[in-house]
Length: 159
Image (cartoon, rainbow, N blue to C red; front, side, top):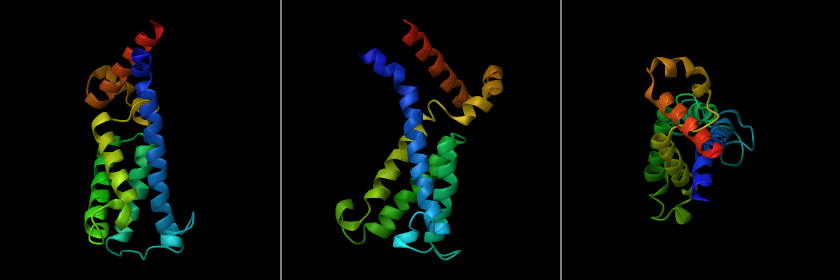
């Protein structure tokens, strides 16, 4: 059972990345463009306002990059840091615990994105498709690791 679960790991990680990236990008789109209910129940964040507008921009761009699996580790690192900032500067001054201060989404996004910094994109990432030549040349460690994981997974499933 453990071998089968391990074999599915890159695929489940890829789906996790896609869902987290999509939801994170939706937060940014809501704040910047007023779609999906808008920012804080309606409307948009004023252009250039600190920190809301910049956070929304990071959410949209980094979320899109994570969703697509392009520059996943760097985008996830930036996004995770922005959520840590949101939690400690915006939410924690209201109360200690996320359930009390409204910072649940900031805390969970921070840790989910931080996980992607260390795991990489998993399966279904565009960088794996476009990085296939770099893999053959051995120039990109992240893509090479993903390709090796995929090959190991195929061998495990076949066995």
